[in-house]
Structure formats: C-alpha cells, structure tokens
Amino acid sequence: MVQNDSKPTVLVADDSSVIRTLISHLLKRLGYNVLTVENGEQCIESIEQNQVDVVLLDLNMPVKSGLEVLAYLQEKSFVFPVIIITAMEDISQAVKCIKLGAYEYLTKPVDKQRLEILLRNALAESGLKQKINELRKELKQKDIFNFIVGASPAVKQCIEQAMQVMETDMNVLINGESGTGKELFAQAIHNGSKRKQGPFVTINCAAISNDLADSLLFGHLKGSFTGANSDHTGFFEQADHGTIFLDEIGDMNIDIQAKVLRVLQEKKIRRIGEKKERPVDFRLISATHRDFTEAIATNAFRADLYYRLEEYPLYIPPLRDRDDDIVLLARHFLNEFCKANNIEPPEISTRALNSLKAYRWPGNIRELQNVIRRAVINRKGKLIDTFNLPSASSQGQQEHEAVPERAATADDIAGFNAKLLPESDLQGQPILKDMELQAILKAYKQCGGNQTKTAELLGISRSTLIRKMKRLDLTKTISLNQ
Image (cartoon, rainbow, N blue to C red; front, side, top):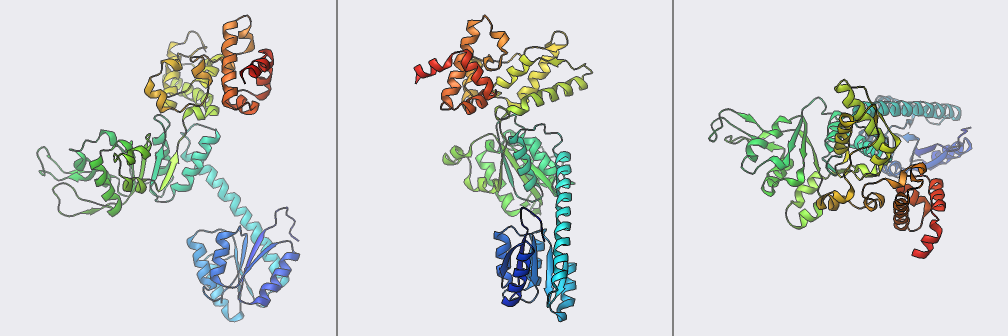
C-alpha cells in the first residue's frame, strides 16, 4: 500500500472499459488516486488539466495513439513516468516507446504484482529525479544571479520569473525605476539562456538620434555616405546568435520605433548602401522606467511595438519595497568598496542602519551604493554613525511624483527616523517624542487602524508598536482624532 498523506495520482488511458475498471479498482486498493480516459486526445486533456504523477498508457487507442501521446509529452517536457500497456504483438512498439522516454511496459493481461512494483519504483525514481532537478535549478540560480544581492520576497519572485523565461526565446520587457538593476537582470537572463555563448549587446535607446539610427542599428557599407570610411556592423547584426538589450526603450524616437518593429517581425536587416537583406538571429530584452499607457495614448510609443516587446513582462521593485534588502545591500557595497580600495571595513551603527531603512531611496540601489561609498570616505574613526541623506522635503518635485507614496514616516519627519529610534534616545526630548507620535499616527491612519499593518509599515514588530502606543498614550489621541 502507498503510505502517503498526499496520494499519488495515476492516469489510466485505455480504450477498453473492462481494463480501465479492473486497473482502477486495483490502484484504489493500493492507495492511489485514479483518473481514467478512453483515448489519446482525452489523455492529453487530462494531463493538461490535472496534477498527474504516473500514466498507464495503452498503445492502441482511437483519436490519438499512445505513441502520439508520448511524442506530445516529450515535446512539452513532461517529466512524470509513463508505463506502456500493450498486447503481446505490440512489444516492438513498446520497446520503441522506451527509447522515446517511457519508463517500462506491461503486457496484457496486466499482472497485478508487477504493476504494483513498477508503480512503486517509478514514483521513487521520479521523486529522486525531481530532487536532483531542484538542486540543479538552485545551483544554476546561485551561479547566474550571484551578482544580484537580495533575500526579500520581492527579489526572490523576480529571480523565479526570470528563471522561468530565460531558456525560451520570448521577448522580455523589464520595467522598473531608474537604479533598480534592470540591466543586471537582463544580463542574468542572457547568461542562463541557450544563447549564453553568443554576444550580449546593450543599446541606450535614449542616446540614438534619428539621423544615426540606421547606421548604428543596421550598419553601413564603406562609401555609402559622407564619413563612411569603412564597413560598419550594426547593433542587431552584432547580436546575431545572442541577445540584444534595448535599455530605456520608452525614450526611443517614434521614427526609430517603426524600424525596430520591422526587424522584430522579419528578423532581417539591410545595411546602408547594401541591396541584399541579411538574416539575423537574436533574442530581444528591453527595459524602461516609463509607463507605456500614457505614451501609447498620446502616440509617443507604438502600440504594435509594445505588444512585440512585452511577450513576457518582468517588474523589478524599487528599493523602498525591499526593506529586508537595504541592510544586506549596504554591507555588501561597504565591503566591496573597501576591498577595492584596500580600506579596513568600518562598522555601521544601529542608528545609521535605521536611517537607511527609513529613507525613500528615489535613486534606488544606485543611490544606496553612492551613499555607502561617501560614508566610508567621510567617516570619523572606525564607525559609521550617520549617513548624509537628503530629507524628503528637499527632494525635487519630479522625484516626488515619480515615486509613489508608500510610507508615512519619511515625509512626515523630514528624513528623521523617529519610528526606529531606541527609546533611550527619546528620554527627556519632547520634540523627538512628538515626531515619533506623529509618524505612528499617520501610519495608523493609513492602515485603517490595523495594528499589524501599521507595525509592518513602520518596520517594527507589533509588540514594539503596542509598547510605544502605551508609552505615548496614543489610545486617547486616536479616539480624539476619529
């Protein structure tokens, strides 16, 4: 008997109702979940709609044969074991199926004891293969994304999505604010793809003028125009058998967009001065910090190009949504900078780390890196106790509009991290206490009076929030404001 809290599911595909019934009864007694179908087409539909652990597959079925089902499973890379059920005269076909990836075969009438053993062994082997594949995936992920620092759920989700698409040839559109690491993810997707041995060509779309676009993107022949002193290979041709990364695609000139769309559709380019087109084989990854909705509505960006670019969207979250990674990144940049400049790494005080976590980071990871480097240079002694962070009120209006409002505290207290100050620092300082009180009040209101969400927004535990509310006598204040 199968001793599992979660019963394995066996799909029985056979055109004989008698065989389906007999095998189903046996499997249920052995502790399996059972699904039954009577032809190959139903078998494929059942596999697509259900979680299947093993397939018992008859070779001679109507609509689609067992061999056709097996070919489909191979094409779609299904990894569960398939046991062939065959008549004596079909053994040569069964052997052919084994070569195509089937686990084993049974002859009719099915021997119950042999079926039980085969199922048990097939599931054990399948489980082992799954664990091996998971380990391989984990090792590959660590290798490819080793230069992306972060352990937050948001970053883990991005990496998982990138892993899912990297081995395909789908066009990827990476969206995220400036400084979030979009190019790092693009490079990682290339490094993990089947094109990793090919070139990775990066283009800053905002820097390409309309006059030079044809030459830069598609190349030119010597003498094709004034100043063309030699042949030039364009960016798309340079990326042949590799990946082309169009950075800041949202800033591309509308006239150039039409030319890029044509290359994506036809996968051919023609150099300036050349009559014959050249085929190019590339994978496209693009990135932008812009929202295409307004650009498309105002005809600043072609909708048909956008849909070509966004075959697979990938959103990189801003640093303010990665609270768990701020300290991790800060220490990484500190050690990296000190090692490169032969400096003994200083310590960072809790007060300084808290100020980093409270700041909004409109420049994201790039800004954090610069702040850490300046702090190492400007420190006094072996401890970094404060960071020179601009207050939220001094940030430009453009930055304020570009970064959605998320947390109440940084704006309310002009960059001062009252929410996380040690309570010893608040003793005898009514101004600081009031700043903390106002920060908690605004967060509490923003979270609709939910203490758990308020604590999460402030970056403290719920018990710490309750203690602070009692100390500040916030119960009366809240009731007065409601």
